[in-house]
Image 1 (spheres, helix red, strand yellow):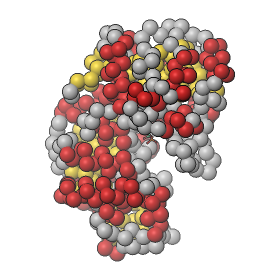
Image 2 (tube, rainbow, N blue to C red):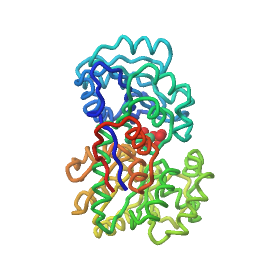
Image 3 (cartoon, rainbow, N blue to C red):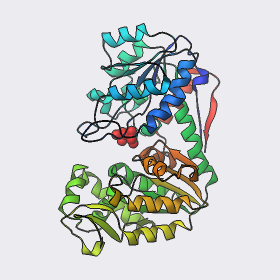
Image 4 (cartoon, protein in one colour):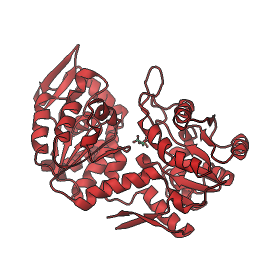
Length: 418
Ligand code: 3PG
């Protein structure tokens, strides 16, 4: 399978109004609502946005932050401040997504200036998932497309979504991939091309629905040989295996849509039981950490980490791995006592000679705090996007970029070759 896209080198951007979709969705403190980790902001600002600005483009940036209803679903005003600091020049924040006011502000931009629009998911239309041709017709896309000259998609972490601002512009505007997409796909193609076996995937985090779908695909096409699980994902799989995880953990799982993904979890476990590991013990969040065997469940307190015995088992399995993909934390890592599983497994992986990729759920925070960054072949800005890409599914943003290359021509650079 071959993918080739236009890159920003193929667009004549000087003096042009360039709309750039990035993914600067960042971890937010639930109480202060402040950004707690600016990794994605640094990545996008320091590459595509800076380059386009230096090329003399008039840069209009759009992104989402959080999901409607979640505590991190906030305005992008503070994101603009981070971007200004990093670029060393003002990034104007406009607290709307499209309107005659936005159009006026875009028309005032001078060459090299950068502007950030409001959280694109504040507009409900953005959250619909439909095929790209339907999304070219939505109001958000039609309006924004009429204000600008070309489009750059650099939102790697959302490459698996078919939402208006991600796939709607390719038919209407000359469209290219940004540097983050370029960099990420090159690194992930390294995993696919090398094909070193066994490939062990360590999956955690809270986006259970996406993870379960990805597990099925990764095992079905042989990209992964073994999957080790932690986080809310492991708790959901324990439920699918018939364990009663206790009222607190059940409440969280129900909030994440347990009823919808439980049948698929059962199906995946039935089909690939011998390749999917779930914890044998878990850490309970009592007054202090307490490790209990899963046979001792249910417990009135929430499960907050994988247990110590599980960590030992996982590290033993990992010793054999030639490829490791570690995706999202295995417990509530923000709390020191429950960061144990994530930190120990990260340390085990870091010491291996395998090809190692880590990303998702802001695990880069832990990687940085442990000083392990240079022990990995790639620290990705993506979460579930990594899994979907490695499962070799044709992803909506990849397909849109391929179609855009055919439609808008140019000297296409070979980005992905797998
Ligand atoms: C992520 O953090 O994984 C991306 O920003 C995608 O977010 P989403 O799952 O809410 O679309």
